Image (tube, rainbow, N blue to C red):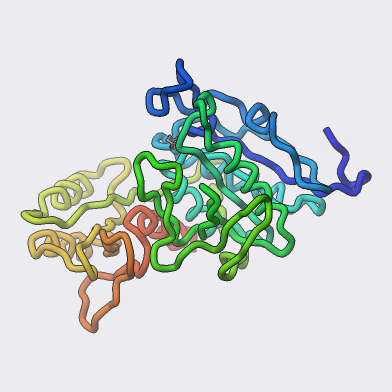
Length: 328
Ligand code: SIN
């Protein structure tokens, strides 16, 4: 381990969580039949040269397929980021992550961390065992972003593009360039280790909002479900959730995100059920199913809207809001 304070080096800490970037298949030709989260983060850093003046530190936080991402991993990740970012000689944190939920983790970290230094998530669409893996270049690019002076906030780096945590979405099932920032466009690009920035870094955030447990307890995550509006939609799922809530289950639904059509419109049957839920004390938020754009609210809208947030990000925002309300 390099003692960077005495050596004058800045440290970049690389936290591993698994994903395809750490995936392994039986054959180098197989880019889909692999197991995610097999290769340790220290090994992923094996062939990567640190930028001048930088020492790399590896820490394994989790080792999973990100479809199985869990709240306790998010908490652990947020705490490790906060710990490392507070170290004077740490320039930034890089997180290796699966592509499937990277946008959710990035959004969560953007909201809860006061990231005055860069937190850069990266990933791969091909496993580490591939004949032509994309992970090493993505990791190298993420480290370059984390080493960039004055960078801050949470970003996702993939296929040479830097995406802000609020805007990034996975938009392709297979292509290495699988992410988009939609209307907002990327924050910038990484070209041969140099960052070419197009717009501001994501906000650095104010105070840390990492969820805390009450003494002797674990953090309680309010249950927020997503229901989708579509042709022929009904309110049946919402009514089942309300019945379950009324029956006194241990984790009753506390929030509902309606994945709405277009500019936040909701099938009349689902809207009626969502209003019944709202009347019963469930927090309801509409988020658009559209990949681009934001909901432009109209006077008299009976259900709150989540602006530009996708349904999965709106769900995280609503969970955190409900946690804050419960703590107040
Ligand atoms: C995962 O999300 O962990 C697997 C898929 C991927 O990383 O591309």
